[in-house]
Amino acid sequence: MRLLGYVAPTVLLVVYSQLVLKWRLPALGTLPTRNFDKAFFLLKVLCDPYVASGFIAAFLGSLAWLAAISKLPLSVGFPAYYGLTFAFVMLGTAWLLNEQITLLKLIGVGLILLGVIVGGMDR
Image (cartoon, rainbow, N blue to C red; front, side, top):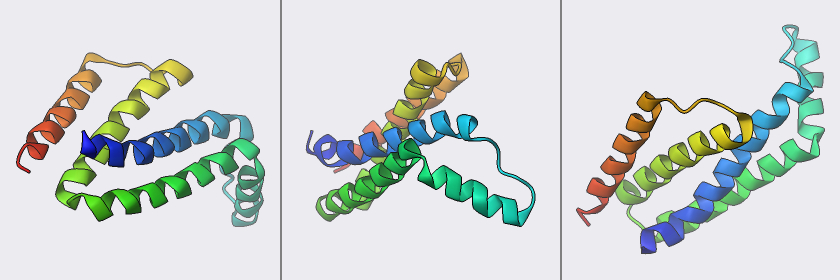
């Protein structure tokens, strides 16, 4: 349970970041091919308040991660972070962005989470 207490803030902040970026980018357009236009596009993207909130969440998630790995072995914390982030991003994209969850995706996430659980039992 201690593991989740340390890793959960990082997971939630990173999942929010990924979902909000994926949600907003289609509304802001696609990356242009010319370098000069790319700079203006990226500036426009960064000025979007939702995108900015995603970057802030990612930064705060990094700070939470620093706290987590100061208390947990990296070999335990990182798989938990990665596995939970993967699962929650998949669920979030299905719920908020109407992406498909296939049987193979479910099996894959299940295997990842099983690996996290088994790997964490060695502590």
